[in-house]
Length: 98
View (cartoon, rainbow, N blue to C red):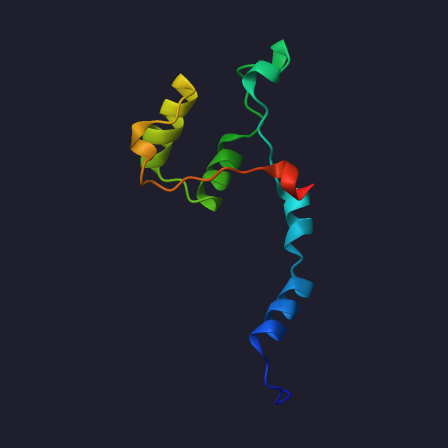
C-alpha cells in the first residue's frame, strides 16, 4: 500500500488500462451468421464442440430454461417466444466491437 487515496475515476482508469475490454472482445467475440447466408456445406454443422458450447452458455448466463423455452423456440420458429417476455436475454452485436 502506498497510502494513496483512489477516486472512483482513478480505479476505473487503472482497471481499463490493466484489462482492455475492447481488445478482449475483438479477440473473443463469436458472431453468428444467419442460416440463409451460410454455404450449403456449413448448414446444420456446429463450429463449437460440446465443451465450448457449454462454456459459452455458462459465460453468458443461459439457464436450461432459457435454452429450452426461449432459444429453442426462437430457433425453430424464427420468432421471439412469449416466454421471453420478462426473461433476460442478450443480443450480441459483434460488429459494434470491431
